[in-house]
Amino acid sequence: MPEKDSREEKNFFPEQPQRNKVFSVKGCHNTDWGLKNRLARIFRPRTGKSLMLAIDHGYFQGPTTGLERVDITILPLLKWADSLMLTRGILRSIIPPEFSGGIVLRASGGPSILKELSNEHLALDIEEAIRLNAAAVAVQVFIGGEYETQTVNNLTRLIDATARYGIATLAVTAVGRELTRDARYLRLACRICAELGATLVKTYYCADDFETVTASCPVPIVIAGGKKIPELDALTMAYQALQAGAAGVDMGRNIFQAANPSAMIAAVRLVVHQGYKPKEAYEFYLQQAEKSRKKTE
Image 1 (cartoon, rainbow, N blue to C red):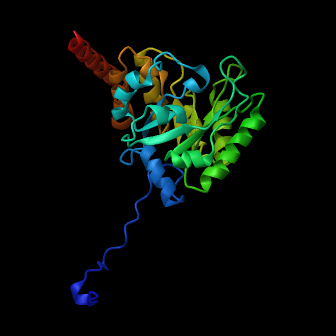
Image 2: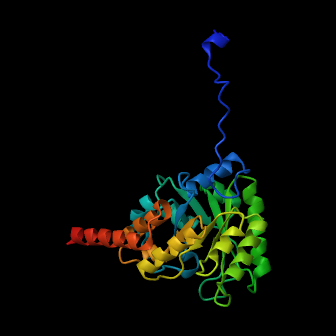
Image 3: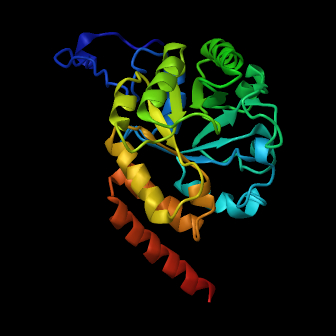
């Protein structure tokens, strides 16, 4: 028998307005539930920040130092990463399906380090991204480069495809060797990507006026780690970028090429999600590295 529908037996809480929590990711308040759910796998809802571990270097560099054996060097780091930026080949062959963080799939490629890097094309179909349960797909955009129009077209085609299925698009503002990484250029590149519909943007950090880069971009910016630098310098870069408005870091070589990668990613996590200052995080890194060293003796 159906339940008796009487006001006396039910509580509709009429005195309490329905709760509508503001979504934590910048510029994404009006997007559909599916996209927000995927973004919540990339950005921790409590902080609105992300520690993305970039291990996609092999798509043009081959077996990069520190990524020769992803199963040995990277899998122990997954517990600290909010999301992974990687290729479909590594995802399928090595990453355990139990990983619950966001998957950001490299979707562009073509030339290797032996050729001109800006001449990239789309290298991933949207059905493949759906099949692999990607939270986002990433494409290089070379604003100001020789193949600027081609890579912008890659971005817009990918945005059109992902929008149909609620998957995020990460625009990576690649600079190559010939372009300057100053605030004026970064403002231009990030804003163009956002205006064309990118859900989030990955760019480089610059010491001067980076707050104008994040302020002028209406979607979240995560910073690239770039080439390996000393651990304290990498932690300082991450801290300063976050203080200037970045929504997270997409760090690779400064984690997996560190003297102790596990200690380094744990230290970066403290900066991203707990606001540790660089020296505090570096002290933690040294302590964890020392503990690890003693365990192996």
